[in-house]
Each structure stands twice: as C-alpha cells, then as structure tokens.
Image 1 (cartoon, rainbow, N blue to C red):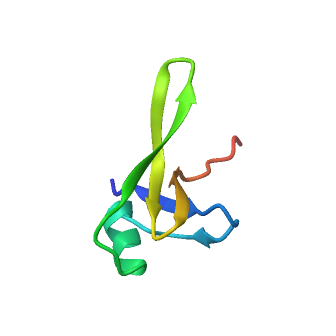
Image 2: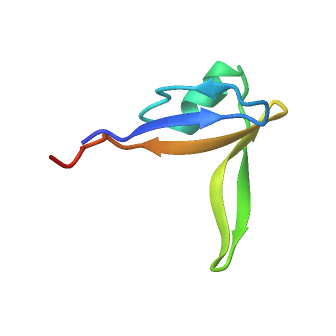
Amino acid sequence: MTMHYMARDQYGQTYPDISPHPRKWLLSYFDRKHAEKMYVDTPKGPEHIGYVIAGHWLHVFRVLPFHADD
C-alpha cells in the first residue's frame, strides 16, 4: 500500500499529493538540495513533523482514506 502525504506551510499554502517521498518532492518543487528537519515538543519528547526548505516551514501530513461507518 502506497502512503499518501500532503504539506502545509506557515502561510496556509497546501501542497497536495506529495507522495510517495515528501522530502524529495518538496526539495524538487522548491529547487533546493537541503532540508532541515522541523520538530515540535511533545510530552514524550521532540517529534519530527516536517521540513524547513527555502524559508518555508512545511508541516507534512499522512493522508488516510476515509471509511464511513455504515
């Protein structure tokens, strides 16, 4: 099963369907070769949530299919 991802930057711009390798896709999109990992503090410690690329703070999300209960 292929994972599907999307990203949202600090301005609210969305980047849909950046699958299957979000870091590679974002580097290509911004025409860059370097990405810093972005972290958020949680009760369990720091958690990697995305990348900082070319001045954009990109929060990456995994997209899951929606299955409504019948």
